[in-house]
Amino acid sequence: MFFFGIVGGIVLTILYNFLIVWFRRREVAVLRAMGYKKNEIRINLLGESLTISFVGYLVGILAIVIGFWILQMLTNNSLLTWATLLVSFVVVVVLTIPGLLLSSLSFVRVSPVILFKAR
Image (tube, rainbow, N blue to C red; front, side):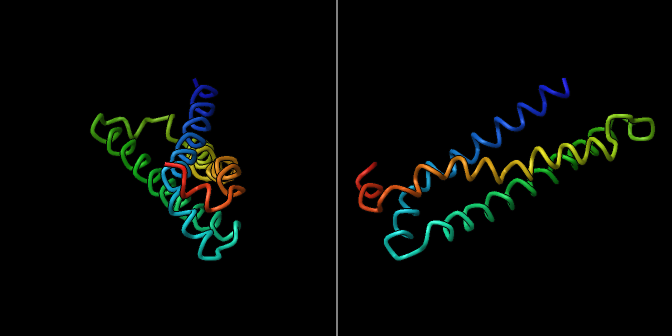
């Protein structure tokens, strides 16, 4: 189950970053036409993606703690350890970086004119 959770987290992170890149093609085309460099656009998208994934991580951990508190399991809980928190942080937040870079490879190489024409 743990391995399935890790793989699922990686797949969802890459899918999420692909959707960010796909739906913001026009914005990227405008930024490229204005003279932004490819790395500047990637850093902008990376900052946004890391912020969203970190907030999502915190909301998820808060939901788990509240759920355990409601079920009165917080005192004798072996699932919420520092190791599981660290592994889930790596899966959710740190794996956002390669996911976004992998997703952004295709659209950053294309010229702004082609991106404007694609609808």
